[in-house]
Length: 273
Image (cartoon, rainbow, N blue to C red; front, side, top):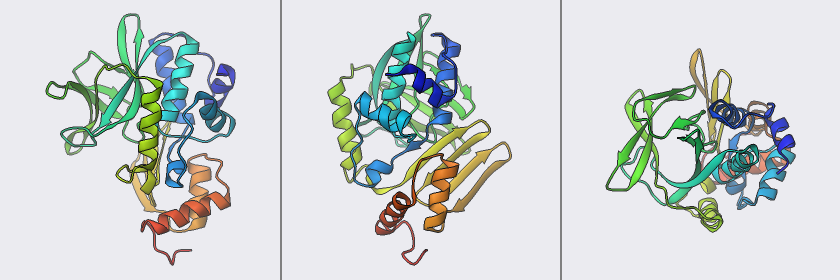
């Protein structure tokens, strides 16, 4: 892990291993590095070794999904002197219970207090660390969150407030996580036909004034003025959105492959240009 190159990618100076430093680090990574699943969409299982992730995200300017983003984040935590523990979560996305363990996050201990720090949940995840012991609402730039205990499942569940009420994101326990757990979950998440990533384009990028996200061709922009939505209607527009709005080094041939894959999946009209 070349910490200096990583911090250059994020555009920040070296943070201290305290609560403020943790918040700065998480926010900076989520602002600088796009959540994206282009590799699984195109049939590629992401390399979740630290060397592979570093080359892709820091060296290549790409983004990634939770196993990549939080592995990189965890390496930075270790190099900066934070005490951190991995957790594997069951994604709920509004359901009363979770599915398989398919999300990686961190519990970071600072001055005896534990924080959930997560750079890899995509659009609805918290953009700053959350106090693990707190049960009241915790405001963040990305929304309001709370933890709810699910005793039958043995999990602590993270929820986000929406106009329709509280929405469950994921639940987790404190079972120790091994590298093999991540490797196996990564393969299943990237290749299983019941997982969303091989069959949908999903991107999210936090910004100083809000967030931008893309689900297949549905583009959503949230800022201080509210929410705007539109449809990406062509190959050329897809290339521009990926390269400019999401700051990804996607050339035209890759944008073409993405568009053809979305066509094959029925997410766009085949006659679109």
